[in-house]
Image (spheres, rainbow, N blue to C red):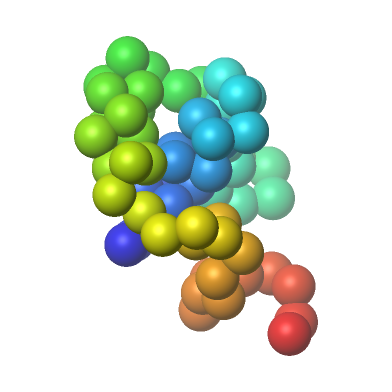
Length: 60
């Protein structure tokens, strides 16, 4: 999953209407983003949002 798709799914999962691609890069979710998330979220394993990614700001 690429970063943009992850961020969209994460925002929809958390009930937000926006997501951040970078520190000061806040993006409002579009109808297409919601549709994408609705298709992908049911296919993701439990705990998917806690997985580590190369773009994560936090150090593990």
